[in-house]
Length: 60
Image (cartoon, rainbow, N blue to C red):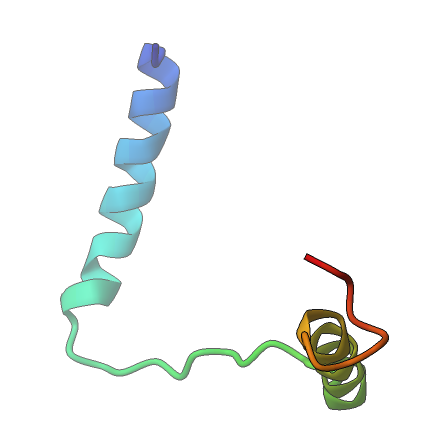
């Protein structure tokens, strides 16, 4: 279960950040840095693995 210290820390974090939620100012979300070439390579690899028409695909 949760300890009193954990609950106190969560409450303190909530109270410290709750004003940011309701202040009406939009904050820009930080976009994660992504390596597009690596993602495209992985997508191609997975496509070949899952393609039943491909000889390289794994048999079901």
